[in-house]
Image 1 (cartoon, one colour):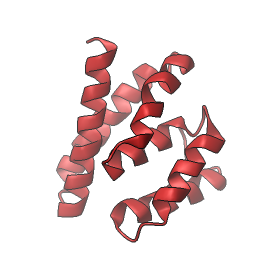
Image 2 (tube, rainbow, N blue to C red):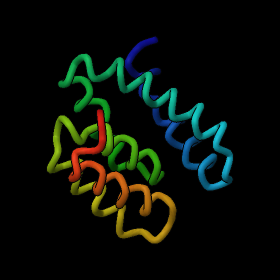
Image 3 (cartoon, helix red, strand yellow):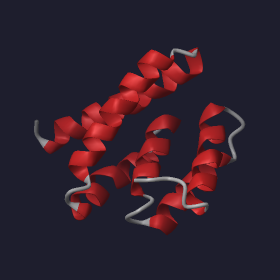
Image 4 (cartoon, rainbow, N blue to C red):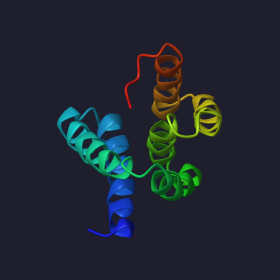
Length: 113
């Protein structure tokens, strides 16, 4: 799978994760999470590529794409990623709540990326 296809799959999994979470479908959410994790684990081998390919996703129109891309950038570009997550955390919906939780976990060193 080439990088463009991998990023497309990542984006689709982030969207699927958000839909599944909103619908309370934890099986589908877990499946999407596994796809996101697997792709992130491949990407993070090369930090420059991770930043190159995930940064544009932090401007996506879908909140869950922004959430996942920002979360996966925390270790590589902390200030940028936290800024994106803090902006998202101002929302009063599920994505905003997850962003707040992610920030808290990160700041308390409880998030392993």
